[in-house]
Length: 526
Image (cartoon, rainbow, N blue to C red; front, side, top):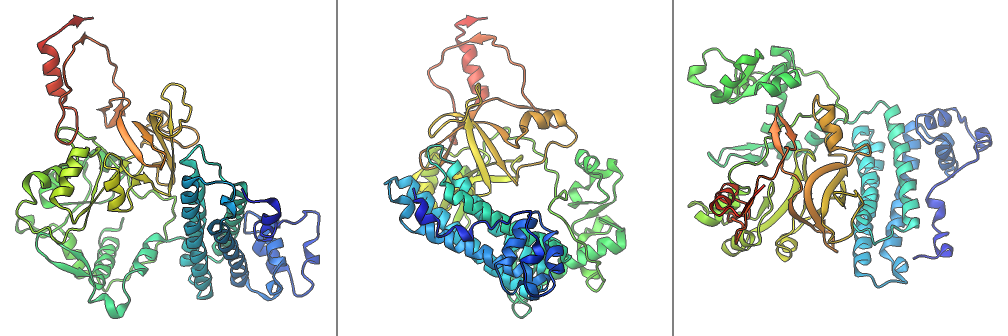
């Protein structure tokens, strides 16, 4: 642990404070402080904002954008100095803990990334690219949070209070910058940010963005951007916008379906676009036609917020053949006659990958990185994943390590007490990607997500000493009722003893075979 005398040299860069009784007008000998006071009132930390700007002699002469840049530079100094502390050996002076060293190295990398993001935000502010500056500041705050989350994976590791204080300071700096950017009229627009990352105009027409594997048809970044604009403009001007249950739940104004699936939407009465032109479609409008005809139309600017509903996800569970069938099929049929020499990486999810199946795939395709992961519909994607194929190969039964955007804990199913490494219990997840809840079902939501935002996955798991997740089984078998997951009422009817539980090649229990075996030699009835 670092000594107080050592760390005191870095305290001025952590959190600057000011007495609430002090008159802010006395802090700035030169210039009118009205703008500074007005700007700081747009943040959640008025006193901290005032004291931060007091430390810079150029504050009285700066405009609102300049004030944001001053605080961004202080935030970058915080991130940079924290990276220096984490990269030094001071925090490891009294320990030889290999795990602690690895986690601190990860934290150093994250604070380095935070500093780089803040440097980008300063450049964005100077160019008045406020949306992008907001994104980069938010990323910096998330990088710092990732360090804390890394320590949460290991209950036996203590998060250094010095780093905790610096994280809090950086978070406050970032919150202030985002508050000032909001006052400048900027709003986070993810779609515009993503589109801005496309190739520049001089390269957009030559760089390929998408390839249709069936036809080898290629679309460049330039074509893709124009298609997006044309489709949006066509929907706006032509239709005034924006599977039966999903459509009714979402209050949809328009549905888009493949021609062969359109019949499923007829009963909803919702206007439907088909994806492609069909000779039998008659006068039906297709997405292809909108893309072709509407490129020149003007599309009004439309901002979105992160709190806006992006999607309503529906899950029907995993039934029948076990997942991942692609891995099993590739192993069984050797790629089906296709040339897979250019394949470099394969991800696997939805069901645990057995050691036997993983070993067989790697033996057949040694040049391919096979990386299993773990996630749920409720977590909106992967929560655990392997960064490299070598990591996955070294732990063939694991499902990866926790992603930085998530927190996790394994709790005893009965006592709800968090367990340490190798302790088997129910996996709980928490993070910004976790769903808000089940649509129109508060009872199901409260049963799945607790008051602190923890998602109860229902999976029996454990983390090893290095933070890798191992999925053991389901704690409860769920059935689907009216679109929701419900724990069935179970009663033991008979007890039978068998030599072996029948499983598929991928490791899934073959329940029909199990039931058939149990009925052959009934030893006891209840």
